[in-house]
Image (tube, rainbow, N blue to C red; front, side):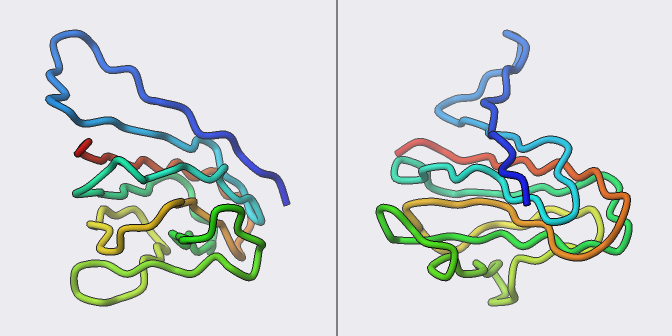
Length: 122
């Protein structure tokens, strides 16, 4: 398992983010986990997942713990109460307000997945 760093997304000056910020995890492979990102100051969060899945599932996990252990990460849910898990490209709202969020890739082969998180600052 590899932990993939997150990167703030830099948009062209012509795009007015209006209090929004975007984080990306790029090139996630089978077994990779994205570096945790603090969400303490973000509301109205949306996740977009895309790339080559190769049979993989991407879980969007969160934790309220200040230093979560692996067993303390839980799969978050969308606005319909369904788990935030992707087996193909998609975009969903994140309903829970958690201290941290991360993507985790399970299963599959030959994967290269990008995950984007957009949130509005309080």
